[in-house]
Length: 201
Figure 1 (cartoon, rainbow, N blue to C red):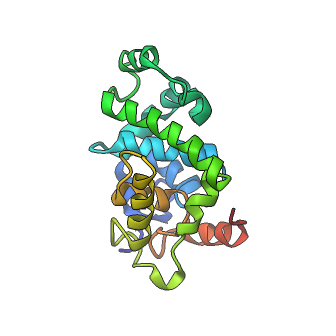
Figure 2: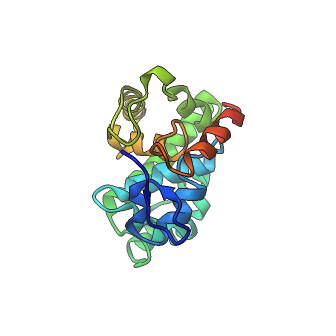
């Protein structure tokens, strides 16, 4: 897959970023850049949960509302949510009102607490699944990988829900565990630089 020109600046980008105007800044400043902060990593796992069956554009447009109603994705706070919070979330039209996904997010926050106690941080856990360079497929040519399958399997073993291999791979792409920008994309070299300067947890 090669980059395409479509934005007002006529610079080549990954084709998926042409789907909507709001996707361009997300593509240019977030997608693929390495992340080592637990809250951002947990937020992305939660948003990937809500995206299941939907488009990322839908979730991106609701992201600020998600951040508000889920206490900035502070896992320690979400882990204490109960039935009253579930009712509140189900009644909020600004987010995806799916009981199974809401309950999974609360449950995953509790599993996150356990994971941090055992591993030190979510970042330390997820970055151990960074693929080796020789394992990388052509950019945006697959939706799962041995690393994403292994990550999903281990999270499931630990009681996490809605984090299958495809979700795990999308998470790895977005959080910079690999540079999956297509060749020729104007952002790909910037991600390479950011990954080179990034200190692994």
